[in-house]
Image (cartoon, rainbow, N blue to C red; front, side, top):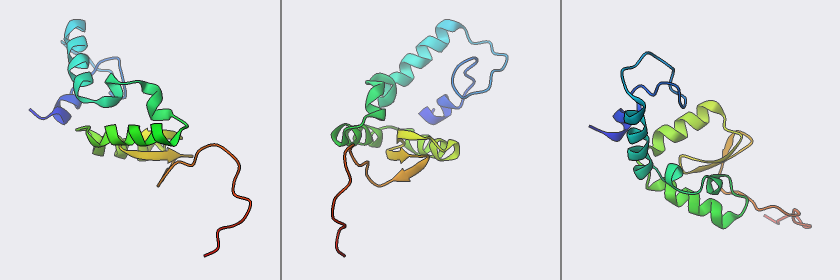
Length: 115
């Protein structure tokens, strides 16, 4: 069974999945969550990394996303929700839009770049 199929199953009372009547026990849900955490970097690592300000940390989060089996679904969901910021599906979102690179905090250039 593919991991994406597992994640599409009922998750009563947690996450973006709709709540529905289910026969799964709390122990089964916890073991499922642990199984998922082993495969998904954003669940097993530091969550602050996906919302970092420093370019090096943002690039690290993007690299971890590239190893994730759910990258396509994560990116599609973030685009649909117009996530305001963070790394989702290996892409950087700023203001609900995908940007190529995140510019660090600081002052803009004094002189415009000559084309």
